[in-house]
Length: 341
Ligand SMILES: [Zn+2]
Ligand SMILES: [Zn+2]
Image (cartoon, rainbow, N blue to C red; front, side, top):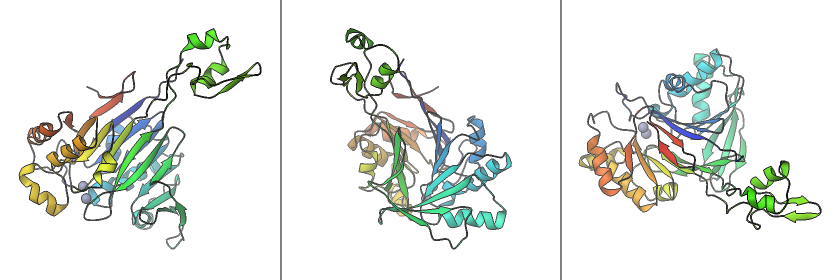
């Protein structure tokens, strides 16, 4: 049987700087085959973490887009919570310069212990490196400098996460989660015809590996035992940014593009002044970047009727939805991310 990797995205907070009764501050959870990934950690993210039933001791990596309070104030709270319940599994955190000092101050002033936290990576894209700090180390420690290729921050056997610079009032990164290409569909009848016995050899071929059997080598893709490689799912997330060219490579060919849409077109000038996006601008990026699904988030508290933003975006890019807290997308059997009801 083919292993089915389940993937799920849930919006834990969807408001811009001011939370509302319905919308918490920004945070998105991505679950992938037992791994938990958080993009941003708005205030009170720990409650949403609980609402979603996330496992408090499962592997977790956190990606912070920028150091504005609405995206990062929930981080110490979440780490406090983990400390209280005795978490033992390591947490890894990536974010802009200043992230280590921010966390270290909490250790110093508010007594945040977080014994599971060692790896805090500050991202320096222009220098093409990460600076790795040990959260448990001293304030004047010399961070380890780790060169990065192609802006990749985090690389596992199944997926990688890249950072992209975007255009906001302080250093801000967009993130792109990309699943690695997966082996094609397995055709057991062909394996049977070639008299390759079922068992570990089948399993290896399902993973795309060439096998040796009775002195003969079998390349499953060449022999049609598996189909051509399948493209992995791509999720692009742009937190705070204004409209700029840099959004195109971030969103390019994404199955799902999550874009901040703080304002409507009627406040286009304000959006530019405050370095944020309008819903229409998000839709233009989605249209020009061959995106599958556009999801608007980081909605200003002034919009009690979000349909204004939705209509504006759908006029340009029909496959748009507005995120609400706990909106969820899950993969279907044929590996398409669909909105769950
Ligand atoms: Zn924000
Ligand atoms: Zn901001």
